[in-house]
Image (cartoon, rainbow over all chains, first blue to last red; front, side, top):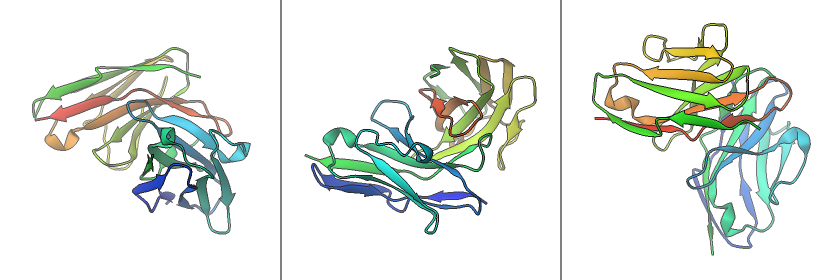
Length: 109
Length: 115
């Protein structure tokens, strides 16, 4: 079965430090991968998708098929990045989204 | 993008009763999803509700416990039946269109506490 793992439940970094939120997935095909973010008192929203290869709010994520990973990175963390981050996977375009357990990022001023 | 509203935003219910959660979308969408997010946990898909067909339930969820209606392309309801304290969760409505890498949009959630 398809599965998404995020090994860190909590991650704390200092402002200005680099941050990496890890995500690994198990699926033998070529999945669609996403990062969703939930800021305090806001609803869950899309941060980025791997196909677009864009940087959103300074975050990037590279799909590594060999390691089946899709880690989220940002070179300099900001306080406003503090939030809950979910890695997510879809097997195909019309399939359901499977969410990882989430990582709570706290950026210390 | 789609704007989703849910009613109620929160409720406290007694064991054995039922609660119906409403989800309204500001545009017509094909695919609607209901998720549960238990305290400290990730999102778990309960069912997919497409207009004009029976809802498709995920493993561990059954229609008798979580009946779903989808009368049109902008509205759906989820009922949590015969509630127990284990049903205390946030219930989220989500919509999305098929197609490559299409975004899913989420409602604000309904926070349910069962005493």
